[in-house]
Amino acid sequence: MTYEEFKEKVTSYGQEHLIKLYERLDEKGKAKLLSQVAGIDFDGVRKLFELTKEKKEFKDFKIEPVEATDASALSEEQKNEYIEIGTEAIKNGKLAVVMMAGGQGTRLGHSGPKGTYEFGLDGHTTIFETYIRQFKEAEEKYGVAVPWYIMTSKDNNMETIEFFYNHDYFGYEEGIKTFFSQNELPMLDEEGRLIVGEDGLIKEAANGHGGVFEALVSNGVLEQFKQKGIEWVFICGVDNILARVIDPLALGYSIKKGLLATSVSCIKANPEEKVGVLCIKDGKPSVVEYTELTDELRYAKKENGELLLSEGHLLMNLFNVNVISDIAKEELPYHVAHKKSDIVDEEGNVIKPDSPNAYKFETFIFDAFDRLPVLGVLRYKREECFAPIKNAEGVDSPETARKLYKDYYKL
Ligand code: UTP
Image (tube, rainbow, N blue to C red; front, top):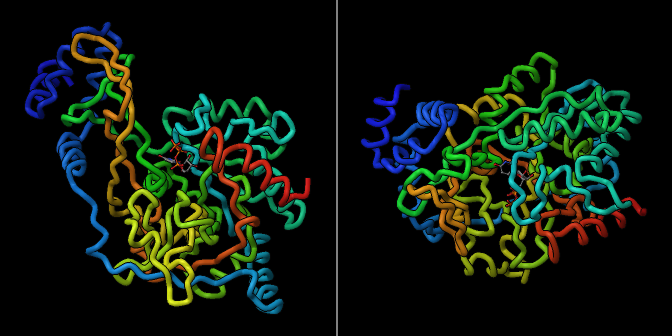
């Protein structure tokens, strides 16, 4: 893109502030900004800004509870059958794990990738390392190194790769396959202007965990799955250290029931818990995020006194590879997050806000659920599957997760 093209483009989209900011950059910075602007879909940016003015109303939807299979209520016979089917599939190399580690982890406040955070198990164990236990146990048990793919953001990709390299892949080099980055979207200020950071470039942020489908396709990972005969992919977040990443029961359950996807859930601890809930929205599988749940729905009860919407969505979902390419064909809806972000103004001053001043746009993995004919839901007891690390202290913190982890593994 030439300077003239840049000027014309940003002017026609009301982004003239970039011109002054451009002038302040050195030659290298100028070239970078031009190439950034060339890659931005300005009509798309306009549409994203329109979203910030929309108010989400759930009262227009019919929200019903989802049916779940309680793993602890299965008969021994049924459970064994599922486990046997799942075990066979794992032994035949049909399962892979995709861990989504592209988040910013702002609440935790750790400066590196969240997976590199030492959560204090024995002084130095990092989040990434905790999963190695499951991978190695599975390798011993099933005789295969279940492939582990890690999704990063453009921001933390190099640091994540270096971390594994510096730790000799925790002895699991055979299984750790690929690090692949998800896409980014520009951040906007409250007037819809592209935000510029201290480096003089447009600030972009990872496009949410829903970006995993597109990233699997565009990075050729889905193709790799097909070539390797991988049929099932367990996609989870990086920050639940009790995530059941290799679970023959969930896999066998999905295969036996002819499902294309299964979500592993547990019952919400209380109505206020900050976790999305699985539900049926207008007849289709869905999740209502905790930030989007109205009080009416949050506290609604069934006739028997139980919470109406209690099936927590834990970001642990098993997908058949065939549905991933279908899902990736169509964009997922965007959600708006109002965040605090340092901004460089036209005069080159760095503005450090006290309250949210910036919009970030994300897609969510569960918005793909309504593209499935049916979603299996397999419920575990909370203490068997959920120890999230979200906050630096208090609820869902390293301290609470450490306790849950130690209790589960009897350490
Ligand atoms: P969260 O929604 O908890 O976000 O992500 P976060 O970025 O980790 O933390 P906060 O909100 O800034 O404090 C849940 C999971 O989804 C992944 C995260 O890495 C985490 O494992 N994720 C989130 C991505 O991989 N990419 C994203 O763009 C967003």
